[in-house]
Amino acid sequence: MCTLEKRGNIFILTLTGEGEHRLNPTLLESILSSLRRIRQEATGSSALITTAHGKFFSNGYDLAWARSSRERMILMDSLLRSVVNDLLTLPMPTIAAVTGHASAAGFTLALAHDYLLMRSDRGFLYMSELDISLVLPVWFHVILEAKVAMPAARRHIVMTAAKLKAEDALRLGVIDSAHSSADETVEAALDLAASLIKRGWDGHVYAQNRKVFLRRVIQAVEDTSQTSTSRL
Image (cartoon, rainbow, N blue to C red; front, top):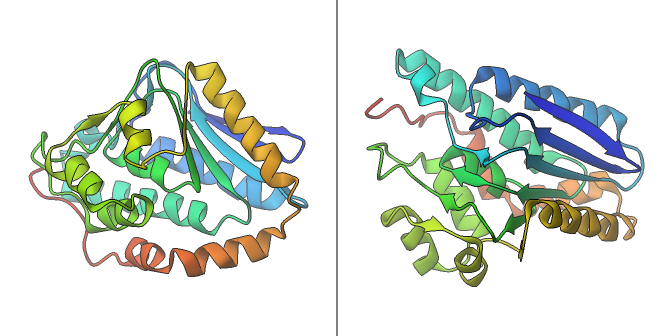
């Protein structure tokens, strides 16, 4: 489901295979296991890159699996919250190298990283909830609000279910940079990770500052009183 590679002090978490990388308990547990390993194995200044094989970064929740019961949706929501919380508290910079489509929960997963890099030759970012008759979870929007400064951009993403290609995403301030291919996106992420590691930051101090900076996001992620199960 995913692999974890370490190059020096750079960790590379890759969603493997040519499928849609739908976020179901199996994949989410695999990601959580990798994040636990990163915490255990990190020494000194480090960085994480998350990327994926194939056409998709992640096409969101595995709704085909979840539709049979409310409990399944609650379980997926809980596991994604755990993944996002781990990313938001990881003691190192985190970079999403989005080399394919990132939709709904997959878009939120990408936004949970400190930096978002995207390929420009194919793929898009897409909050699909309006098109598939689901209510956007409150905590998804809180992350979007924290990461995308322009209100007009957020309205475009949520209220028109826009499929943002890299050029538009860069113009709207959704991503940090765009690159001409999947390989170049990952290479740019590696270069960025190396430059951040050279700063020699204390990882625990970095994580604490992120917790202060994104405190509203973390509060929303931890608030399980609102779980999206509408119209499953």
